[in-house]
Length: 150
Length: 210
Image (cartoon, rainbow over the protein chains, first blue to last red):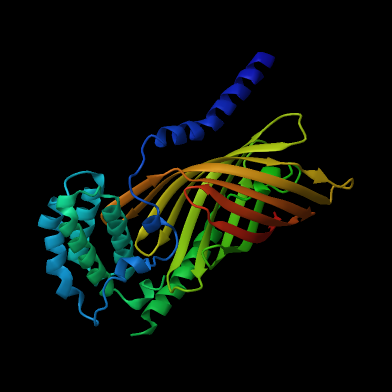
């Protein structure tokens, strides 16, 4: 009888540890994305994202073609890797949706901006990299002031 | 119309509050459930407020029930209103706790939960698991009780925005104390991230057992 109680107790403690085991397994899957765009607070674009330009207000459609160009040939010139993939994916998303939902686009711009910073620098890719940075600044300029207060 | 967002906001708040109240077996990652006395009524409900380092006020409701001497179920909902933004954060949580039995005066619990957070386009699913340690004290007549508590937890967090998903394992710690008189209790807490986020929360909760 006593053995049964001990076994039951051990079994229950084993069950209690299951969530910790699951967490340990989950830890094997990690992300290369930075935390800034995924914090559970309202998104605010870093000043550095859009401080390089001073533009009059314009419609988001005006920058759509530039975003597509940045996602295509300009990003291809940066080589390959996770950071480059993030830049491309973010620019394509923004080209599709810019002007629809500013808080989401703020987070996407934050991801792209961070990923672009993480792309290894090589002399041959500086022009494309700076060009993408300017297009990011233009896209940020199309967002409302409420997400550009940092 | 300009009152559309305001109406949606009110409706969302009503939904959060109602949702929290109809949860049958609930309570957040509150210390209360770990030291909930075995001779007290099995269920409890609490409401609280907190201030966060991200310039926001949190309001929440939690409900809990002890299922047997070791296991309790809990759940709750909370909403964060940020000072500088019209955007609100809503969060729902359901989970359970296993109270480790022993002869030590320290109350020890293992907790696990599933949480869903939403703040505009960001959706977060997280599965925190943690350990709570408390040192309960009860007055001779049994009417007063007090317990300082510490809790640490690690989570599997999956945050998604259109086009991107970020998976992380944040670690948080919490310290606090519970003071109870008969069926009424209050709790003060300080919660802080130590891995993948350094934000903090300071808050109080009031509740009663039934």
